[in-house]
Image 1 (cartoon, rainbow, N blue to C red):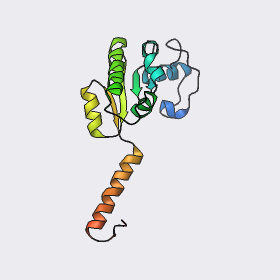
Image 2: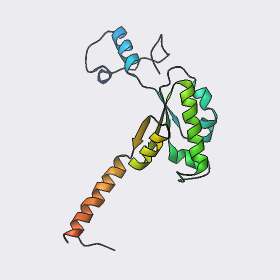
Image 3: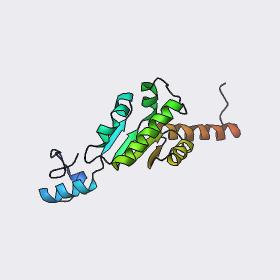
Image 4: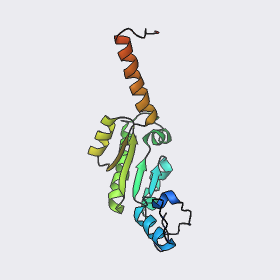
Length: 154
C-alpha cells in the first residue's frame, strides 16, 4: 500500500500523482507515503469474520463497509435495518476502534449517513452519481408536469 520502508508497494507513479511536478524518486516516495489513504472494503461475511486479521495489517487507514453486498452475503438482501446486518457492522466499528482504523460506510441517503454517523462511522458516503442525477431528473419532470409542459405518461 505504501513504499518502503513503510510498505512494499511497487513503483507505479505518474505525473498526476505528484501534482505534475518533477521530483526525485525519494521525494515522490515520501510524498506518496504521506498522501496515500489505504481503504479495505468489507462486503462479505468472510471479510467480517476475518476483520481482526485485515484490520491488523499495518497501513490500513479506513475499513469501508458496502452494506448492499454485505446484506446479500449475510442472507438479508437489501434489508438495511435488519438486526443481523446492523450488529455485524457494529462489530466492525468496535474492531476498527481497537485497531486504530477509521470505520466507514457508503449508503444511499443522507438520512442513512446520519444514522451511521451516530452509530460510530467516521467516514460516510451518501448516494452516488446515478441516484443524484435520477433525483434531479425527477424534480425537473415534476416541475414540468406542474406547469403542464410535460404530460404524465401513466
